[in-house]
Image (tube, rainbow over all chains, first blue to last red; front, side, top):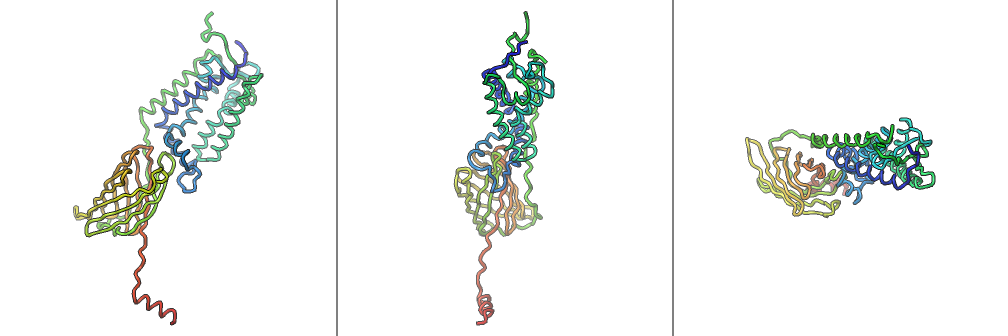
Length: 183
Length: 198
């Protein structure tokens, strides 16, 4: 099994696949959990009082697709959870990538979950914020998510490690061998 | 754990299947609208004639929208007419004029007010008020049908409404009657005159 670290392009493509799957799941869940999270958004954003900050055209347009938008964090968190459970998301699986420890050895479950928690802090943080109805938690999740996003650019560097890779002491490896491994 | 594991796609397939199943089973997405305070079912229609002003509030698109609403209700015997304005500026429509009309009849020994209302370019509806409580339904473009219920006294009108389409939201209307200026009487004028000591 190769220990070659995956480049930024392959990782971006894998992320794109996961985003598409997460979006599809958010659409499918819009009538159930999406609606519930939309109602929680009303609580979280303090909507209902005339002095709420969540007014104007942007919240209004977001609200039109509220059951998808406010339900999306859970959908993305669920899809990405595959990374913690199996060491690969569907996108990584398609592109023959996998998560490993920084030294290339198989990662422990704890390390995988730590990596997932770091990388997807925005998704699960927003889910938590909606459940709790706390806009401050949402703000923190978005800020930390932005840091992770910017830190992901580092995967294009010579070490091919994103910020969340470094913090969780993991790496994403590419596996050039055939998926079914037939000789 | 190897890369050849097919668990990631199987996992997501299960997620999607569960989501489809949830969608098929449907969810009870109906929102429990806070009920308007239910007053005793009076046998008489409250004196609603007068000038009313208040606000409306709607959880439309999961963003609370609100605005002013006002109307003047005139009673002529058993007939009521109303002219009003609802401010829909927050929805990009501006203040929209509307009208209403109703007639009180005796049904089963109870005074019943059947009324209609409409606002050009906004929507229309019908309702029935028995005593101080009313219910009805209507439709607003583009959000579709809604139902409403409410209670009226001679000084307040409180109502809640709920759109069938969740994107239309649910909300409430609250209006109070403008207190009419008490007409001065010669007795009152004289009383104040004497109080001043002059």
